[in-house]
Length: 162
Image 1 (cartoon, rainbow, N blue to C red):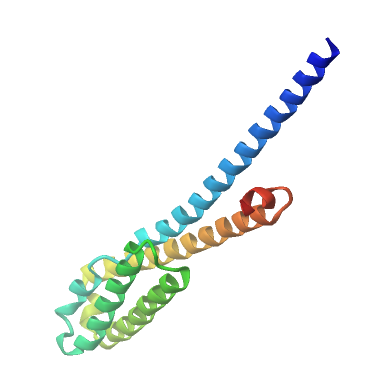
Image 2: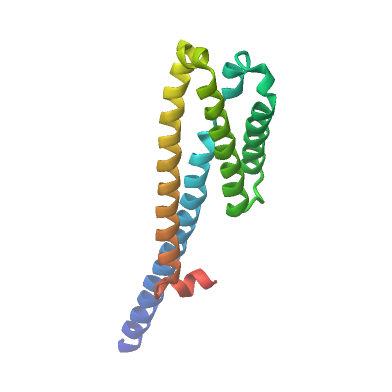
């Protein structure tokens, strides 16, 4: 009878350890997916049709509009490529940010544009969008930090190594 008790205890220990390992593995998978999702939330905040609103006011400034259009297309392309790296995504977003700075300089040169109600509304939406992008990046950084800490801590690092 004592052999059965020992066997049951061993089976119970193995079962508990198995459930613990599965739970830890599933937790790591969930955290890894949250990392991807948090970056995808930043991608969702791409600037829609900004150039079209401004184009009619400064047609001779086509280089700036082309930069914004190309930069936005670059961000969309990188966002839609599942093999793109974080560095590629950051570079594409930085190119868009730089193009937007140039666009703002154009706006400063055209007082009529600054007074246009559609553009004023757009500026408000753009400022809100930039805040959301900043928040999204911060959320992404926090999520990556939690994930990296988790996969480096003992005993999770054993499971993560597998």
